Length: 220
Length: 220
DNA sequence: AAGTGTGAAGGCCTTCACAGCA
DNA sequence: TGCTGTGAAGGCCTTCACACTT
Image 1 (cartoon, each protein chain N blue to C red):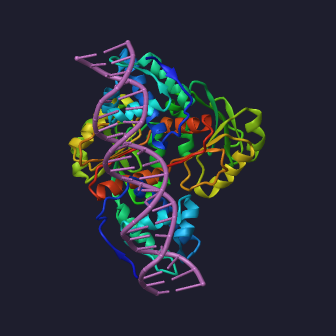
Image 2 (cartoon, rainbow over the protein chains, first blue to last red):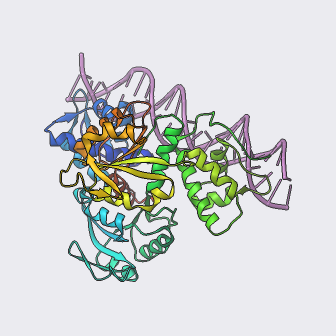
Image 3 (cartoon, helix red, strand yellow):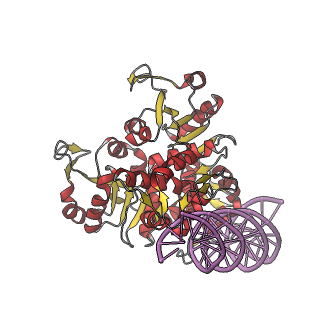
């Protein structure tokens, strides 16, 4: 039995995609300390899921393990990256250069996984024209022109709630493939454009909910 | 039938708690424009869920609606806040005053929902002793002493992955009720302590996964 | 007439359990 | 023997459908 990848033929549970990312993060940590192999049991314990869940998740995408041995970390990492689409780099535009936006630019985790911020937009005249990481901050109006020209595929929205849908519309018009939204509002984007949204206040409310109702919960 | 709250007797689905936050955010937006009522249909359309789902979610906590009329926004908002535990304020400690941590302090959304940062910790001698929002940044070693003294109930971790578990352990020792983790690692916290984790790179990987596999997906 | 509240049905995800391979 | 891969079972969450209320 070997390590054969397959197209994710069957429908993949939403939660599986999230866990694949966590598996990858764990594997990268293990590789860094020189571990050669791991097992569904070990992965599961580290991430708080059952070993069966780990095997099922990986099973959606292929056969990567070796019975009696486990998974070879150096083999599994590239496979996870292919599955997640991070076996390549992505050009990312950031819209909204406020506190949060600036912090995201500095955040090393994105670059480390192959996401490059190569365009910056804001509507503040004070910011437009100034430099950030070797790039010039441009007017939001320029999105429709710049995004296709620079082959930008993903857009991060870090603007106030009231401006977010307008920015999303512009990104969609510009042909963006996916939107990562930090504005505290649910955006409407057409089918075919990827959409992931994080509302930081909502997440903190989850914590107060769990604490208030005494059930510990783990959320990602 | 009227507006009667009940304890969340039955087990509440994990996803329901998330949606309650989104309902609240939407209601606050409607209230701001003076809307008196809303309906499960309207709520559902705005958030991308079915009307039945909305009614079911609310149903876990009580009877808040009026048949033929819908939900009175001014009544529903306080009820949602009680459910989420944000009908009060929370004292929050921030550990890790880097780019992300600093941005979180400035982020208005937390304050708006009643979360107050009232203690700051870092292990960088350059930062310890300097002021942030009227508070002095203290050494991480001081967590165990300061947290109980200042009645701090929630802790936000924004330190590098390698330091996160140690910080979590300190917070737990200090009697913290809940931990909100931004470090890209799965933390182990005892049962009884709330835990919510966000890995920003994981979320962006979700987006590249969806885009790569052509299925649009909405995630929060 | 309009819209909630909720048992029942349905569907999706997780867990189980074990055949099969190294 | 040890551990994966996977059909089958189980459980949880969502959707349906309609009685009931204003």
